Amino acid sequence: MDVLDRVRLNSWEPVVQPRGTFERMMLALTWSWAPILIAVVFVVTAIGHFVTKAIAEAAVAHARIGMRWIRGVAASGA
Image 1 (tube, helix red, strand yellow):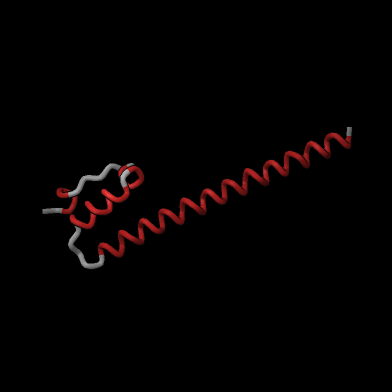
Image 2: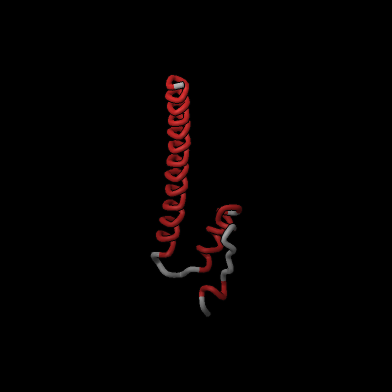
């Protein structure tokens, strides 16, 4: 029996139901390294989320600073 026959996951399930998804994956996979790899995937996903969020927040902050600078230059030049 193939692993995919035993476990069906939608792409949103790890986000909406992380504990249930994790438990279903643990029950379905029998390879000894599978739990470690699954934990690594969850950690990498979380790190990726937080890094992306930090980059987006920094970009917005710098865009606001740039807009203030442009307004200041435009106001002083007029």
